[in-house]
Length: 300
Image (cartoon, rainbow, N blue to C red; front, side, top):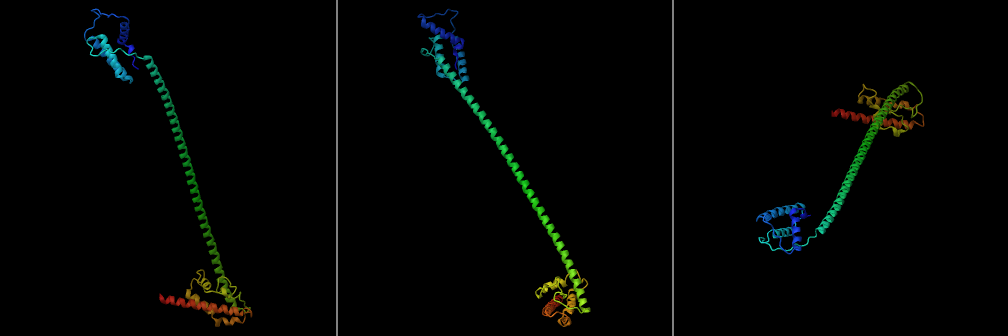
């Protein structure tokens, strides 16, 4: 806002204008009051510079208003030397301008306050969003940590279960192997004992009591198979000093049909056919095993 009336030169100019309007005669200055040729211009130059700086500083520079004021000053100080035609000053609505300026300042102030409130609100919203984002990230991290921990616990549990199952299986196999080894040893021991008792006693024979070369006593002739005979004869738990061929030859001497015929008279009539059939199966299997061992020895 241009406050020209605060300067001394401006106040003098207003008084002079009012005085000239009320008095028809021309005011004559004394010799001591008469300014020199360049004094008014120096004063106006300083005033113009000050006004120009004030308007430029406050951002309200209005070239036409300032130019009118300068022309007015030149005319009053030296009408003859003025190169400008005097234009009577237009009434200035300083009060109206001041009110407009105050209204503008108030509006700017209100808008600035609203803007600052909006900025503060936006800053708080941004902070709340950042806090919410941090909480979400932390919650996701905890969930992921729990998931990883649970997955690791499940993996360890599976590993432990697999290890227990493997250990139990190994233990079971070990127990089963021990039982089988004991069964084989008992079967071999009974096999030798029954053949010895058959040669020295005259007790009647039955299909179930015949010392078959099997780990488990057969229920019928269908249980007498080549694989069962091999598992019994070639077990490493007995006869470690005999080779496979020696074990087959020893069994052939016992199960040859002509040799076993002497025991058939002691077999019960209802079991005789089954015993004869079983003896024939054992003899054929032993012959096949011997042929296979001979071929294997010849190929070496």
